[in-house]
Length: 438
Image (cartoon, rainbow, N blue to C red; front, top):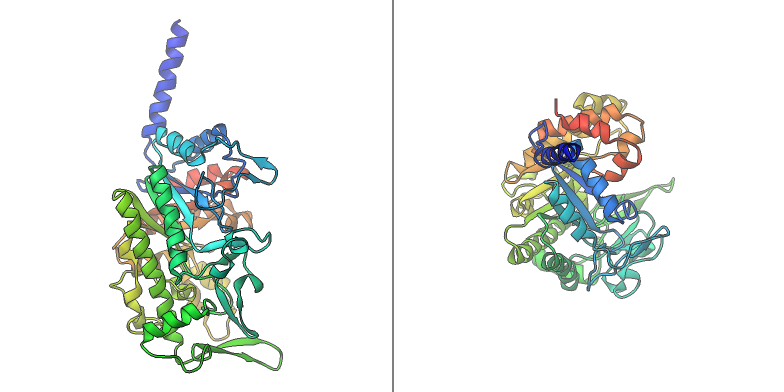
């Protein structure tokens, strides 16, 4: 009997320590749990229990549960979006309520649980899966190519097909999913992911649909004489290389894209807060601000004017900054080099003859984090985020540790993407060292 009591006391003591343990760095540390990559790993309560306990003991304070992927399928019993029940031969039980399990078990451990939702990505190009291939093919973005304007699903590159964010029905659909989640569950926060235009080698190549032309003309206040040539044209050199030549409306096109995303961020926030005013409303972006305009997004503070620093920004571009609409922001400091000196060295000689190696200082965790904090200007907490695969590719866990410490030092905390890398390759131990923050 005495042994049982001792064991019970030890169990309770350990449990209390697990729940009340504070990370050594004293800042919030988030771990992303991708829905696709962890479909089987988190497909049972036992799997969820193990991963969350590992996350807690490693030093994470919060987890972000990815509930909608780039194919538009969701991982909860939605009545609106297509639900993914089976992946790679593994089928989850029909009665397995994934978000409910993570919320319950995460809160038991003292972890806050956020829901991550992919925005505007509604089709898998490879498998032709998603609503863009079934019920709403007319929603997809139209891409301007050297051969003309074609549906995005017909151009090469990228895994996802994007819907056009200027369409009212698209916005209503994406926001309805956020509303549905908040009516079904009580997460600590909602994190938007991919709330942008698609990226490509051609800057702002989409959307060139008629709906976008009409909206853009309204934005600039006059009809466009040459469409789409007044935005930009293509030039083909004798050796066959295609380059983009900005037209007279190119800067306004960039600004308009950012205005479209600003309006969506605001509209989504209003809808989310109407259902649950206390839920944290957050966004996940890339920290490479000097070129992120290419995705039609301005995640800076509205009090920051990029026209003073970057030639691509019009004097009125600052109006599209939406940082102040958020409660938190996750900025992807997705660079292998940690310090500015490392980035300059690795870009010597310069890969671009028009730029000096010194230009690439911000192609680093340190540099991109500093730029992010500079343009956000403290209007919202910002968390440097890392992509573990970059360090796995070069078999350098110590560089990963250094990157974690850099984000903890320079930003309001850190977010790690993704748990699959830590769990599959045994990198929990390196994350733990990094989160010590020393």
